[in-house]
View 1 (cartoon, rainbow over the protein chains, first blue to last red):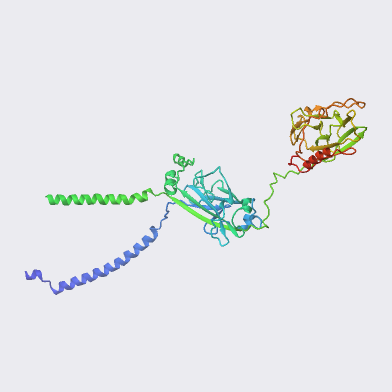
View 2 (view 1 turned 90 degrees about the vertical axis):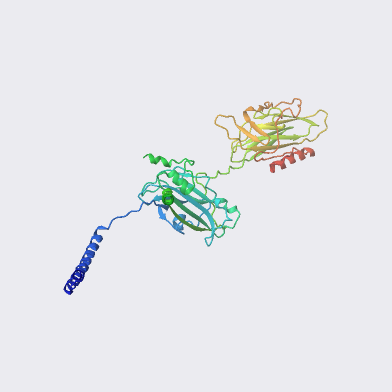
Length: 231
Length: 258
């Protein structure tokens, strides 16, 4: 029994040596395999990745605009030589939408017009109805229930295809009512202000999407957004 | 056994709960729709001052030029006891004219004649006006209106006054081929439908008629502008002159009835 249980010193030395050899070979192998793996990953795990989303941009006179002070930013181009807006005269202010992605979408445009003080803060005492916008009623639908003297909400009738702009701008011109000269309020130092927001929804179940995202029944507006589903 | 069964039941219930919870968490993303939004704003200064230029005049709707005001003058001639009236258009536009004579009725009878003049039907408009039956073009003179005065027999008069007042208006615009018409203060007159006065007979010395007989017109102030003329032959009967002066004043201030 004792011969079986106890190992000779020679055997022990052999075992230690074998363990040392294994350790060295193992480390070398790990290093090599690790290097090989890095090379392998670097060449094969580079792949294109695209996230599905829709996108829309606002355009003013065919130029994409976004952010504060982006609208009416070029008075010379707007006024065409006039020192300032002349009451009763219409100036070109084309507000529209363009699809910036490769997916179709439906869009709406919300425009707010109001008077501001010289420092740009909104002045609610001056009548926004004195700022007049002309708009397109052929390709856009004005929702009267959402619209007020200050706010106009337009829905684009058609599907806005990928990378396409609306066929016609919703808002075409801006003017100041000549009756501003007799209107109540101080118009001696003020600003004509516009704020525009363009929203888009997916084309699949677009009416449900509009209802969910915007709370608007587009069918009631006479829009046939879901007809596209049959394509 | 019963304890083990209870334990199994609890595990099953937990598993069901976990699945339900997982499904519930998934409901949110499932109902989301793809949307996007973009905003922009801006403003430009505006200052309403007296220097603000007036609104541009729409070239499609030029202002209609103001037509020149009508103008006429009375020309009077006296032949014996008769008076002959002409009205000349001295303005730059066509006119229709009417005249009215004021006179006393106690000492003489007055009669009107002249085919170029007419009266309106009885009850149509104010009585007393005599209308020119044609439209007068600029510088044109109307036909003569004869006023024949016959003193009442045995009357002791050495003078008799007749004051003449005339009014003129621009004729109404009528379609081609339609009869000319003119609108005075008391209504529209179709010139073709006037009842013409009898022709003048130079040697007519007949008895005078009721002065109203030949003058069934109407009168009141001018619809447009009235030119006037008051004339008195020789010396005046004060009431006649007053009445004429009153009407003349009224024509100068349209809108105030005499």
